[in-house]
View (cartoon, one colour):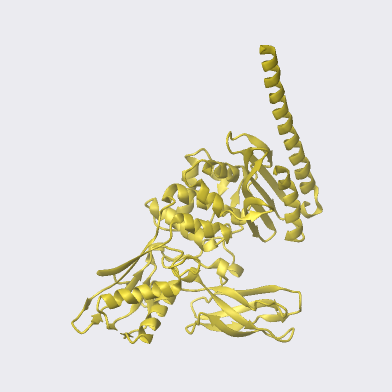
Length: 470
């Protein structure tokens, strides 16, 4: 009887070992095929697969090669934020005034909107948090306080995040576009607006039909050209440097149906102050002075006044809901705001560099070499960020079993019928996520840097490697 039991145990062990060997050999064959492909002739390719339960390395090829992550870096930012901030963390935006309100309802002082770094303020993604919802709440708070007239200004205070809104390492071409919107202590509508086009003759400039919402305080110069049918959207907005003129450059196919791009708001704190000023005046509540922001006041050498009477606190959605959209739609702004918030939560000034330092220290204390987590931003938009697939997979594994893991897992999109985050910048394509293979939970990270040819072709070849995990 004992001999039979021993034989059964031995058989199971050999079977599992053989299955593991078979999986490893299949992955090795698929990886070798990818690495030998002509599109990867001059590329750096790395893959790490871990057993999420045991930590066993199921497969590793070039696991310690530091590579550009693109947007798979957002998984590290998300997991770090869950650990440091907690899944129920919410931002708190303060709304109030300075001075006093007299018996006639006249406020002699300024109305101040003081940001806390909430990236969702005025976003269309959350019920009750849309731009009109927020403006209506502010108007209602002023009316409840008896304010009928304002002898002063509406001021957007974004000072909590300092003066550097763009992380070092981002490139000029990205900055004027929605995905390159800078951070702000007081964001508004995800710091973006739409520019609608009127296409025409191939080779002629594209006309600007309108912006949504209207941006009357900005000027636009179109150097954007109508491209031939099939050339697609290669249009870029370039942010103004110390002025209010935005240039549009590139080409835009005449057959494009959308006929618009989304651009970055240069000063979101000013924009929300402008919107509230306009709303109040439309409702018959006069505001004597023009709107201001931390930036516009700094140009004039004036400080931002502090709220003496708080009227309203606007809470953001929970971190779990923020991370859901962060990863589902790969929102760079959300990742950068969270990185600065991590720094603030840790008792440091809310800067990108401090956020990086806190993140590296956090993972160093958990056994990860900071040199394998060589990051310069939170979103992966910078081509200067370098992370190894071993480090990325290890951090993914650390999330498994936590109380917030279901929320993080839900935030990951589905590609190739697998739960994973994608990342792409110039000649870089990456994926990181989770997969169950024959009852075994795995996590993985795969990166290809400096490929040639089409991204579609490389993607299909990377998916053939990942298909071995199914």
